[in-house]
Length: 211
Ligand SMILES: [Zn+2]
Image (cartoon, rainbow, N blue to C red):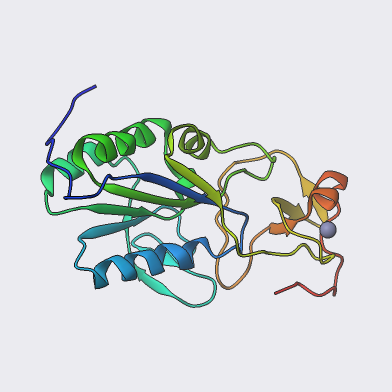
């Protein structure tokens, strides 16, 4: 493993790799954008990344209307990026479930060797209820991992835990892992409680869609 651009830690600080995970609509993109804002207010120099954002490449978008520019992390080498941009002291990654495992290793390196804080926000599991490979590696390596505390609800009112892919009112359990929804139309995904995920029952027609 190549070490690049080792730098001295900021005085009194130790960089951390943090992973915040939750189902759809749990506010992850909002938190990513807010994190960037808070750090910029403290004169910290960072970059925001996303992948398959619902409003297209080059943005991070929250369902409640926040939108800001972001760098697509497809194929990105984070070690090299940090070596090339020595001013960076933190990275914020939205849609972190789409990181590949090697990129998560790179992120651990820039934390440990370059004193760059990394805040990753993403789904834990896919519509099959299996961990995304990027999220799995983040859970394994992160200094700190935490479920996003903002609750999202299943159509029945119970706590939403899992993202189901729905077609014709039925839950699909196979198909391509990546199917990006949009602001305008929530694609084929619904947040479901474990009971309704496992029984395969999506939101009935004309039922309330929750918050
Ligand atoms: Zn339910």
